[in-house]
Amino acid sequence: MPYQPLCRAHRLISKSVKTELPGFETHKNYRQKAAVVFPSLPTSLIQLSPEARLEEACGLALAINLDVVFADIVKLREVKPATFLGHGYLEKLQEIIGSRDIELLIVDISLTPIQQRNLEKKLNIKVIDRTALILEIFGERAKTREGKLQVELAHLNYQRSRLVRSWTHLERQRGGAGFLGGPGETQIELDRRIIDDKIVKIKKELQKVKQTRALQRNARQRVPYPVVALVGYTNAGKSSLFNRLAGADVFAKDLLFATLDPTMRRLRLPSGREIILSDTVGFISDLPHELIMAFRATLEEVLEADLIVHVRDIANPNSGEQKKDVLSVLDNLGLKEVEQQDKYIEVLNKTDLLTPEDHASVLSLCERRLNVVPTSAVTGEGTGAFLRLVEEKLSAAHRQTQIKIPAADGRLLAWIYSNSEVLDCQTKGENLLLNIKINAVNLAKLEAKLS
Image (tube, rainbow, N blue to C red; front, side, top):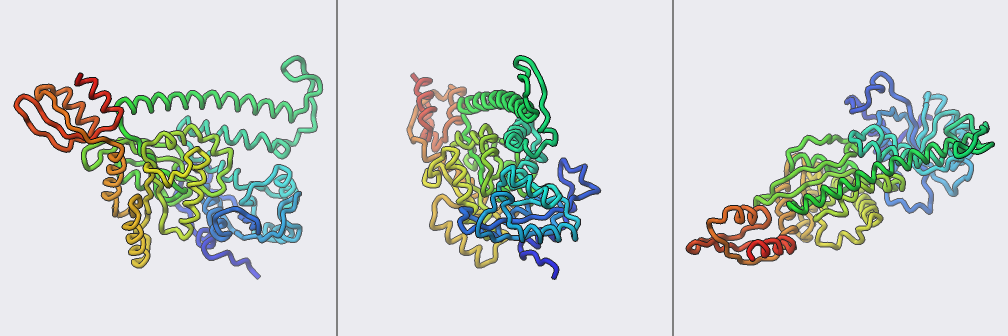
């Protein structure tokens, strides 16, 4: 009996990927056939349901133009130390691999190097786990030097633990003298040392990136423009919302991890106040630790942001689980209980994909929660309300005060308009009487100018 994929995963498998993605020139005439399996364990801590997790894994495979011809959930009572999957299921896989000419098996979980090697020997095809799959996507998408460095660091850390399966000459030994490798140094030790040297070099380069970003943040604080960072699950629509708000042309597509490199644009709020809007890499469930650490330099922009905007795909049936995954990553980065903080806004995106009943329900929810706003990056619905909420949140930290300045001091007046929100301006003889909202830092600067 032919295999019948699960309904949602089936739509992904059947989806024809016609559009050529950046970096996929080598795949134009050839698409590697792949099988995707998700091992489901009764003790799993994964938020998503097995069906949703399988669908997501298929989406990841499609994101690098693989031809997914088989997808399945494997219900396991226990993990087999040698191969993770049971002997009976592996025999079933062997038949399917042979009948469908499958060249790659994706096991949507973290495998040990030994498990990966044993599966390849048993099935006689290439096997990768979830971490390797995400690394492959990141490697294809990184465009800036910083992004490429971060991906390379994550890849080297991952590869270092898998030298046992990456080389066929590890049984050889080589002689040497001094620091070049002592007598009898094995090839695996040499390879590991080479990788370690590369890791040290990349970390130094990323440290320079970190210092540059710190200088840029200091420069913005001197201007200053508040930074509003968009975060969220991958494919939640962050880049589409970013493009609509900022008039930018960031790559935005219905693909997992369409955005990898962070982008910033200056944006004018309805009051005329200017902010910096930042688009960041999307999060995902069970995000590999190597990637969190490698992208920490980029994610520091989120830590330093004046306002964090969590963009959610409210049309996704797993939106609630995705929210938990995003908050978990933010928590790991050091933003503890960010949802309870004043600097947090939740955007329920993709309302254009909801049924009328669900749409009404979302609107009702947003009316009851002050920090939640519904939007559609496609139609523009709710973007005005979102910008007003951003302005309200940023203004909440500002103090209202009244000042008097000489009407002829145009330079000071221009500074006040650039660094505060002018609520009212009246002429009193040769002076101007201004009611303004201003933060503590700029208030101190203004007082110094007036003294």
